[in-house]
Image (tube, rainbow, N blue to C red):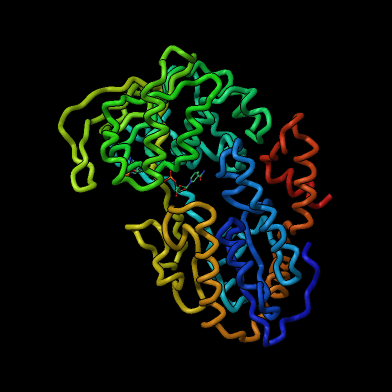
Length: 441
Ligand code: NAP
């Protein structure tokens, strides 16, 4: 339980940040940096903090996950606290939070998959990147997903870093994943799977792909899997001068793939451009993907009318995300995030991160984004004697809610570290009830 807190002084600004991911933490950091008269509660529906750092960033990218130390430092501030296992909508309404706090910031990310909008996309064997990444990252919502990986080939749709993550996690061997926190249920399934061909499919060309060079380059360094591309799909070196630095580096990685020997390793990862999905084929489950060849005109993908079928038993669309709507909060259907003006949704209600700008940018993008919205809040909202912390604590007590504090989370973390296999950083717990029991022990 959270220690009981004296009622707020009327000069203290109370802010609730909903969502304990990078956007939420950077906003809390900026809100409390210079002004002791601000108190922030970072509320999350899970008993664990750090959002996408924990459940989105790939398990073999532990160095990226280290940024959570910075969020931990924010949590050490007396005027910041983590309130886990408290769900907006289930345990508390937005209207209640707006009564309790001077300002509410929605940092809820973008948890829903964008849809392909093609026939067959609801067939078993089509699994969006949201659930798929959540599954291998031990997110409690997806621990029972159990995707059928007894397939020879997989089609990963999209030319972004999530597509690369999914393909790489499927391609890496048990020994390559030994020092990661890949969920044991996923390790068993992936490392026992007969997958031999993995396709990354882009509807536009290599110049339009949103891969970052480091991530694309990693595909050339896999132990058991050779990355391949048809050199004819790559632009001529003559136009290298006209490319951005990132495009040039991506081309270098792709040219290496064009030279690779398809027989050199047992698993092949085919990076294919200029193909857009037209239909997922199959009666009871997926057996293939109908694709149309495309060309790029003025940066846009244009179909040529020429189609082909890719036999595959698993399709993983990695085509971006949408923020989950919240009742009574205006929603921008086009961008899949909350309608807002530089983070302002309505009086004393703000949004940050993917919930503000849509699912773009790396973790670092959230830092200036959160700082800007924090400045806006400090400039626009005056403390009005709302109870803040003590108001939330009273509601938690009245409803007998089992919230998890940062100190409680450290017990969960210690337990995960104690369970880790040799060399691995942790073995994540997936059962919320078990996490709460450990927190309360
Ligand atoms: P993304 O970079 O926006 O890529 C989405 C891809 O899906 C694009 O290639 C897009 O093609 C394609 N697409 C969209 N709708 C499609 C459709 N109907 N049919 C076929 N293809 C379609 O998004 P993301 O990969 O989900 O990544 C989200 C953000 O997280 C990005 O900013 C990414 O860099 C970041 N991230 C970073 C890391 C890392 O740094 N290690 C790891 C993971 C994610 P078009 O371009 O033609 O629209």
